[in-house]
Length: 362
Image (cartoon, rainbow, N blue to C red; front, side, top):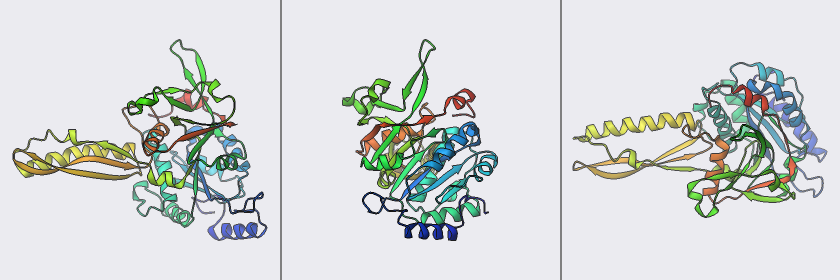
């Protein structure tokens, strides 16, 4: 069995798909008989969470939605987790891809999710992921498929078996099922909160000040919008991945260049830009980066300097404690998307040991 694909060879997977489609079970709704959307179910995995991997894989195996492909992105320092889960038989196409074990936990999460994004969007340049020849082949194979939705799942979350069907039925661009986290209060006591946040004041969203959603906010069970959600059990349309972006104004970082010649100015600008792009490679691995320029005059010399950096993809900010799910929420909100929770659907979240271990730098 080749590394990088756990379930079948491409020929076997295609044969299985044809056989089950002949029986009317894959890609068709058993209720309406209509074609079901194609869903990529996936997320990053690591051997640091091996303590909950059996529960996670059991949950993955039990998922009842038929028209799906499972893709997990392993960023572990060894092959241990991949070798372990390769023993599990899952009744759908199931791939494991491997990305490098980066220095920061958040960097590993972002890189894995951006690889899944690039699979769905069929991005040609995959060089930043440092994929093996075998894994790039599997990635190109996946890019031949036409996905409609991305179901983001995390390794310590086990959702209800019909979570995809339920969230698809809500017909939202972005929607998550409920899962919880623990939070230490100022008095050192621990409380449990949903992975969802509201605006401190909806009239001043530009401040990006958020507050926890309290437990009682989930009841009565309903579909409702919030300011931010987690990515541990979240369904989103493909177009969300296409449109999501973050715009950072950087002109102030360049308006103090003071070279006396055009050559000196260009050298200063290149040096400052290199520092910014080096940081982006850490915080936005795999994201698409676009730099907009503006013409200014320095010491009587007309020069073009970066004014905006546009990042398309999952990201985080080293200067802030939040993970990429918070920045995903903020970025998509700015694009005009509403984020929803289905509080009828509750997941198990095996996060406690990870929190205690504090494995690696954030």
